[in-house]
Amino acid sequence: MIDAERLKKNWSLVAAYGDQVPLYFYSTLFLTHPETRDLFPMNMAAQRDKLVNALGAVVSNVDTIDAVVPTLQALGRDHRKFGALRGHYPAVGEALVATLEHFSGPHWTPAIAADWVAAYELVAATMADAADAAAHYTPAWWDAEVVAHERRDLETAVITLAPGSRLDYLPGQSISLCTSLRPRVWRQYTPANAPRADGTVELHVRAVDGGEVSTALVALVRPGDTLRVGPAVGTGLTLRPGRGPIAMIAGGTGVAPMKALVEQLAAAPRPTSLYWGARTPGGLYCLDQMRALAAAHDWLELVPCVDEDMFGSAGIRLGSPAELAAAHGRCAGADVYVCGPPGMVESTRKHLAGSGVRAEAIHFEPSGE
Image (cartoon, rainbow, N blue to C red):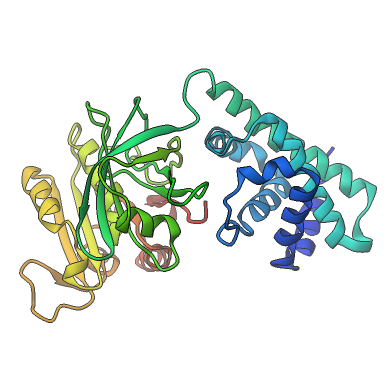
């Protein structure tokens, strides 16, 4: 039987070495199994500790593995887009165990080694089985043509894609994108529309400092270009069943999944308030479009808000979307959906909790995929 507590303590010991851990892991993996190098981006700076931290956290919590089986299965299906095969999993496991042994020093024992191997094999089997099953009914990725590219400002673009074959997703789920301009680098974006009859997907992309993919998508991609798209993942922002009110709190391009959810709700409307914030009115890059959507649905209230407004723009409130939504009583007894930059999501959750909103009523997609 695997001793999960022993694994957690060992992982805490190893994780204390910080950046040294992923450096050792990748050096070991690429030296012992050079064929795996092509699974990762050429520039490893952005990748760095993501895989190692995820593996350590999941594997060391093997006692609660049943709770994350759906997540592991989704990861297994998603990782097919990297070209990951069942045969690659043992190489990653060997490098992980070698890394753990190296940083454990005298604390490493045969019993701990056996526990790590058994726990990793359980996780890897769950992911690989899901990937193998998915291969029978869905592609590993879709090639999608850029059919429209609209620059809304210097940093934001609205991009419409047409996948070569149907891409299934639920409103609120994310898809990952890769462009040949940034080979093997993938980033997650959430469609701004519910699935359409013609299969097209609308994405809202904001270029962020140091963002290889976002900068390329906003500044370099053009209609006619082809992007590679991975399968849909995530359930944090998908619509929960019920008939009660909904409050949506969005920052910047975090309005994209809210727009998709509104389109889904049109089939079975519920009282919905959408508070959308930006630093200045210029950051509300698709305000006319969102106002038209609200005008078309009498059950939808749109409240655009900003931190600064030198000219007192009509119909735009001053303040944060979370503070205004709570002050207006829109979050009481509602399902609350939150999306935006990580700092905004975290501060919104804290503010809502302080306002008496139950944690289980606050829905968001955890960052750090």
